[in-house]
Amino acid sequence: MNTVLSRNIGGLIKSLASGAATAVAAGAGDATEDSGAYVDRQGYLSAKLVITFEAVLQATETLSIAANAQDATDSSGTGVADFGTAFANTVVATGGAGGSTERGTVEIDLDLNTANQYLRAQFTPDLSAGATDTAIITSTFILGGADELPPA
Figure (cartoon, helix red, strand yellow):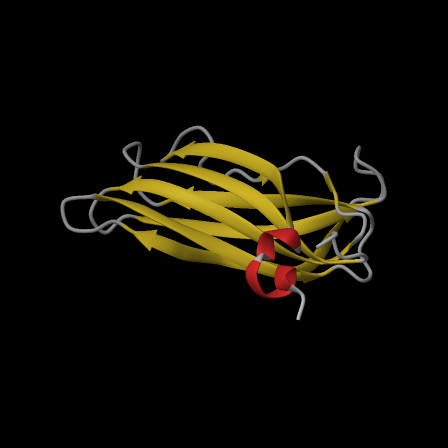
C-alpha cells in the first residue's frame, strides 16, 4: 500500500480559499449574498465546499446560512451558472443562555465531472437579532480526485 494513501491525506487534496465576509445583525453584510473569488479546479474531479463561521449571538438568537457553488469557463466569470446542489437557508447556530460564541461549518459535496474549470462560492449569512450579533464567514474549496497522484 502506498503510504501517501494511508497516512497523508494532505498529499491527495488541495484547498483554495474563495470568499470571506463579516455580518452585523440588521447592518452591513446581514442577509446579503457574498460571491467569492473564482478558483481554478483544473486537474481535480471532486470538491467539498466548506463554509466556516464564527458568530457572537445573544441568547436564543440565530445565524442562518444559505450557500451554493457556481462554475464558469474563465476566472472573470464567463458563462457563470449555479453548479451542484445548493445548501438551503438553514439555522446553523443558536445563541446559548446569556449569549455565546458559536463556531461551525456548512459543507456541500460537489462532483466536478461536468463542471467548468473555475469555481466560486456564494453564501448568505442571516442574523436574527437587531444590531447586536455579528458573524465572520469564510468559504474554501477542498479539491480531491486529482487526475494524477502527487509523487510519493
